[in-house]
Image (cartoon, rainbow, N blue to C red; front, side, top):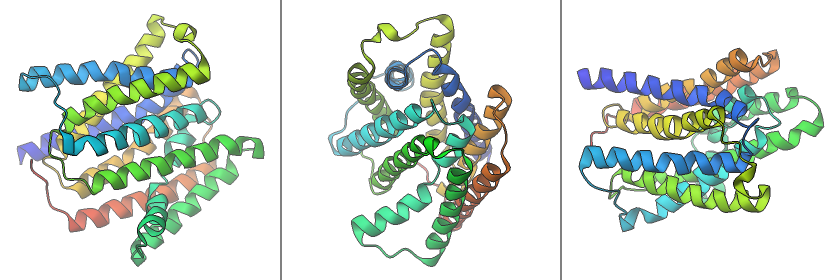
Length: 298
């Protein structure tokens, strides 16, 4: 019982960190180019993950061959494509809006399962997808002039890459430690995005390495990408998948509220309405999973 209480506290801290991460990323973009920010956040996270593995397991990170396809998939689809596109769009889109819009994954998962696997989704998933689509459409239509729709479309495209990574991970049986995989995913994403940043934004001399920018990078990288994700992985050992998913739905809400407080972003009623519909779809989906799942102990 105590382990479940501790896991729940860790999960709450995780979503708090990941939610606050949205306005912090927005602030960091004033000092650091988008693609270099993504590269540096994962490049800085990797050694901290390696240090954690060394202190806890008395060894260096291990690369397990059967896990390599998923390590590459998450590093390229989620860490590189998702975060690269989202961070790029975040230069033009309010952080609160972006934090909600990227969670259009229920809709993308239904579409991808149908297109790639020919799976006919059950009625509940179709209903949740329609709800998510309505919320998404409301946010897009309410978010300004047509000239701003490009960055919003980039976020929706980023969510598709995230959904591909989610589906790949959900079908994989891990042979090694997820923490080991996180190290290699961060290392690979850091290298890939460094190449993208060099081509798109030029040499890293453009990065402002002031104490302020380093503080942003430490929060976005080791704290959010490392500790935030690590707490979520640890919680999944004691809590059911449904409970983890349910608590995770607070992340976009925290992102929206903290963006309003820290960045003085206006709270628009249509965005609140659209976000509420999308969050409702996430909550109902998570409760459905919770009803079918049991605690996973590793």
